[in-house]
Image (cartoon, rainbow, N blue to C red; front, side):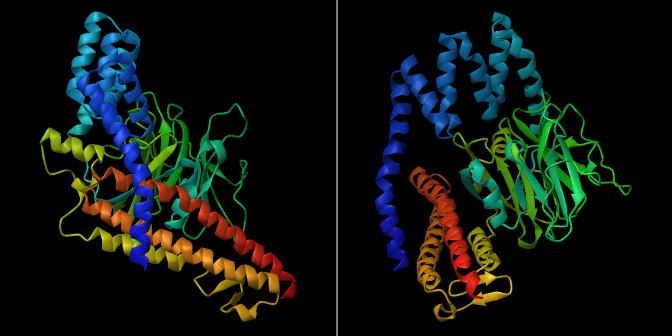
Length: 445
């Protein structure tokens, strides 16, 4: 029956996703057959919206030849796709023509940095990717066992596994620069939203790293990762690392290399050592307003360089796309991720047939409810919980199929994205229903 539901879901959603994918393919084919400013502009708009910056490069190249105002966008496309030789040729050509001179030095500096980093690309063993709306990032990571919390416009903060310490971005007044601050928490104590007297500002982060945010601690408890904006970075937000010293201070932060950083917004690097998974969050190839979470195998902090000097291979590893290139042949990533799914279910507050009314009160059957209305809603809760479980299982199967297609099936990609957009709302509705049941049952306890 479950397999039938999966097939039915695919049949119902496939036509819409096929149409969307075919439209972009048709547009790209039309541009290649008969390029024009109108077609190139459409292709750039659609490719960017769908996170396919690789399709936008040729269109920007055409537009740049027609109008110099497109030169910065062309260079940015070359950078994003790590097409460094083409970018170098473009910079040289435009420098001679004295076009876009205001940006030439900046891109030349970033090009030099990228060339240096390309000689030291690290091997990140990516198990799979998940693309979600940016505002759902905190909820997703919490479900993965990474404790983060929203800090509104400042990004995300981080809690240690025992929730006894917080690290968060803060500013003590509206016009002040953002700082990373950490402090201790007592049991059930709310996370401070203002600078407390006993909190510590990480002063090792220089002012040149603007808007530091998205902090996380490595499993060793002393290595701190965070993202910040710098004019000397690769573009957008870049990830940095620092370590706490024996005296309690922090060392000077250093930027991470490729593939952790890119020309996009690289937001967060976090770990769940118990499940041997790490999470790299970036918008480098995600559609507008979304981020991609690269779930990778965490091997106790071991770092391995890509065993090749071939520029094409290094580029593939540095870009993390397609990510199956980074996977080992002897590892069953489906089994690894299915264990993750099992662990998530066990982490939940209530399994099917059990309902937490209070921290010390758990009902295991309908007959235990005193409120008739609460019992009726409990029936509805079980139905919605079952539907949510089936959706999550469907998503897991689609991801497995995606792996088998080596990440090249656009229709599967869209099905996965659609479910990932729907699941947060379903989880929120289930939590709201559970809260309503608890409120109805509370007077009877």
